[in-house]
Length: 470
Image (cartoon, rainbow, N blue to C red):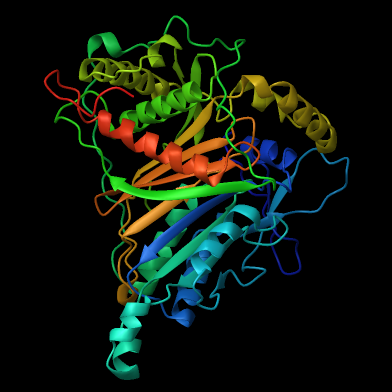
């Protein structure tokens, strides 16, 4: 069964215990490997031009939770010898989910820090929280006002911060709940837009194309080279807004392929700068086949595939338009084939590992041991491309979202994740890293490299240039 197909054990009648759902494979593996130093959180921030009314937003979000009841859950208690972890479904939230921190100059920075450092507990329903951070007016805006009435009338906007315990949910599922809340709050239609279409496959691109020197299942892939790590553990993050990359009409590659190539070239360049010897790459890519409408199953619903790159493919220093086009074509063939594969979310090994044969505490110890032993074979990095945000996220008097950022956990051995989404014609990039691997200055340099190579993917015709060698 996938993460979303487990039926709940219903309880009927007054006084009966709540319904329970066994932990699916993804949830159980994540639960086994939790660490306090680097919490498994997914962060979403939605920027609005206005500030929503507190009472109305609380009511709308609470009702949205009830309309997607699979999100109203907490980890059920059980004896050490139980065979499964279980989610206990609740009719209402256990805690106040929506909060409004007081406005202050560093409120946005502090909210981001909380999103990376403080995971909502699994023992309270739901395992998410929503913070509404009001933007502080700029000094010049306040100074230019003619009296209190004019300066108070200008709303500098707000940011909705969703922090998700990734053991229970993923970002697209939580965004679906937020879209329902927006519709209830503002009364506007938030139905998802149609997904973009992809050019038909060419006959020779129907099978997966793997480079000759791509790492096999037994060959450890490249790691992100160590930069200037910080003394404290945890995750750091940098967000940026970029133009959505252009591509010729009818191109066989997609924006996702351009992002994949930019990620691979960014890390290859970084590793060269830090003296790492060339090695093949594997980049993990979540694939989400769920519908985006109100019927979307809530939970951890993506499956993970790994896109391989040979060491020779990424070794060039002068990326001509022809070389970039060829790499995009090969990447497109691989991603297309991988998306078409039918496989369990984390592979067959994880399915066997979570079979309820032994007590769950014993399986936890085995899973943690295998994770440590398999660390050298973990993929180089993760690229999670949400794509075009399919919902308007129109909050009525608070306005429509003009920027949406996501970020994914970045624990070692990967130590770096790349997350992208597009809203209002702009690409919103989040780089998240382990502080034991990189610093904020390292993140800024990686952002510049990503932007450079993403721009290079727009220029794939022989007569075009994109700034010389790197």
